Length: 157
Image (spheres, rainbow, N blue to C red):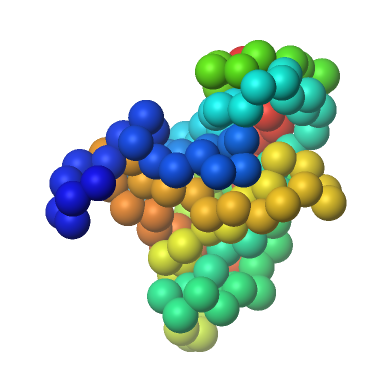
């Protein structure tokens, strides 16, 4: 892919058989919601039942000390976000979805927490991979303010 060329999920590498992507973040009055997708680009079906494993990293790729919550953790009420995990099968060439939710608010005098990178795995013990922004105008940016909390939606189809 040429430098500066728009990326898409179809052109992102998939050496491990999985590709994690996001098309950006929706924001309203301090509430942030980022859609996440895992694509099975392997040759066998992927079995999921739970929540993505998430590490939020700063610009220098150091892990931020934040709470990663299963579901919304009371951050916001969003239809379907707190639906419990259920077993799903993702055939080759298909995808499953998740999302992250957080608030960009400043509740203390400490410096704001800003994630510039995310490493993600499908389940505990699975290999970590980077979450890749797929549209030219999107980036991976998790601007937590001083809240230090990120809600994670269970995998679903």
